[in-house]
Length: 283
Ligand SMILES: Nc1ncnc2c1ncn2[C@@H]1O[C@H](COP(=O)(O)OP(=O)(O)O)[C@@H](O)[C@H]1O
Ligand SMILES: [Mg+2]
Image (cartoon, rainbow, N blue to C red; front, side, top):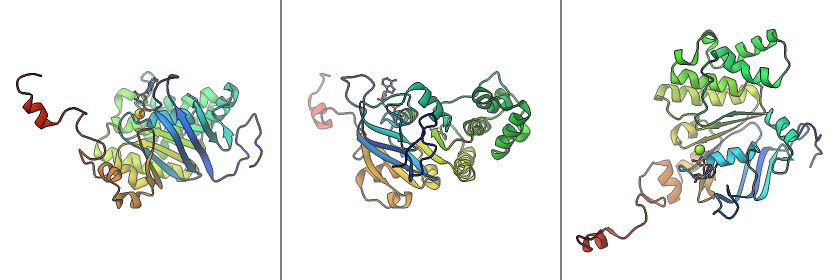
């Protein structure tokens, strides 16, 4: 493994994976049933990788582990070869500057214009002169097709436009890694397709690596190079979208084809229907 400069975690690292999780166990409180157990994942440089699975399976938690917001009870989380799971606050700050994040329900600052929303991370994290910030913001807004909307306030734009502004804000610092948590949630079909294509093209234009957390199979499969399905705390299935689409694995089939019942049961556990009817009047 190539040595890294401690103050700039991972900058000299040229391994194939930007992020790796190795045998990670995680619970929010010690003694609780682990949310993730023995989880291993790889996020190769330049790729768009999706993390999918049912609501509450731990997708957002995976993002928090990579961002160093929470630490695993055991196992390793690395960013460009540097250990996130044991990193101090200065190290985490330096690492997070190389990560762009679009959080679940991540809203724009309602009292800031579109321009100022995108400028925010640049003003927060750099000492660049305002003239340069202006050029950078206009470039990012141009990339999402909203340069002309720069003076509007969030209340004056549609939900789909707001999501694109949030994308521009996530990439403001030219991150090496971009993480999107449920980027398609609540979008109409046209905005959804547009957002998906933007996520793919921004990754390629920036030479970045992208992680998408989503349960939207069709849109995600269209732009992902590789997909992980999480269930019961670990990887239930993984592969390239075409392979997963063709999979006969019951879990994958249920998820990909949006079937109500299967290995993930429709019914909350309980007595059988026949037993319940036989029990007559008593509840
Ligand atoms: N801050 C927290 N404290 C305790 N439990 C949490 C916290 N955040 C999430 N959880 C629980 O962890 C599980 C996984 O959550 P999450 O990663 O948000 O799932 P997903 O993003 O896949 O819907 C859920 O059961 C959720 O209730
Ligand atoms: Mg989530």
